[in-house]
Length: 141
Image (tube, rainbow, N blue to C red):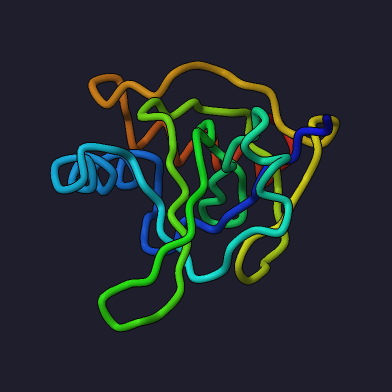
């Protein structure tokens, strides 16, 4: 079976550290890492078969998380939504330029950036992150 992945803009988070902190708060409330979205992915079977969500920050993919499960639900306002259950670990990737888009986009293994290392908040350096971002813009990373 084919595996597909999601590209998703990380709205409201300028870097991976902010995503990490946001997800720590989510885990405190739900005991799991969950991303809630309005639409249910049509390719949910392929996503559950080893797919990841690739997070886009300021126009670049910088990190990913494995997708563990996907579930439909109706919220307290009777709006149909989707829970995407993610691995707690955030994996830093090589930076890959992305054009602006809304919602999410699917992509296949052949198009994904390479993994670098697990995100470690203790080693996070915002100045280094900014430097890598600038080098990526110049096509040097």
